[in-house]
Image (cartoon, rainbow, N blue to C red; front, side, top):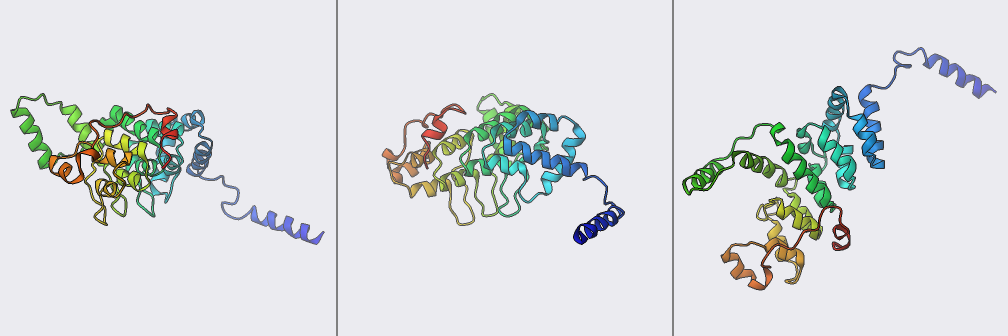
Length: 269
């Protein structure tokens, strides 16, 4: 009896404390709903949740300061349906939201955890929305390459070149240890993601903080390894002389369509 009485008095007094009866901030409510949508891969509910521009702004601000947000979790867990909604609805600056511990982007997490479909979705969606990305000035090398192509008579597609530059920042971004998405895919022996990333323009020669590149890591694999062959595809003649012609396939191995069972059945690494 007495414990219940004390509890009732405590609840009564608590109700008069400043802010005790206030509802949770709108941003917290939205984030909890976002967490639930990611857990259930509920794209319809998420699309409804992100229908209002003000709510999108609140969610974006929360995601940006989160140590490991639902945006990252969706990519790492392969929640393709909700990832597509967020790619469509969130500002494109979200591609560079990093985890606190490893400074990984969502794209890196998808590559590390072998979710090739999400990599495709990133490329396709940003291809449609690239004009919304912050302006990015081409390097001197890029400007020189454009000038050379023009002088040689090649048709220069300014729009395609602009997207290529923007996409290069995403597909070749580095985490805290200097690992790119492709290096993460090779380290985890993900053949399909390795294939996809090469098709999407990932650089095999970029080195991490340990001076490892996707290509150097692949060199440590057996000569017959399909992943090794993918990383050595389209190699310069000098390198081919070192690795041996048998290690370089004539063409890059075929990539199954996103969602095909081969994405899961063929990649057992």
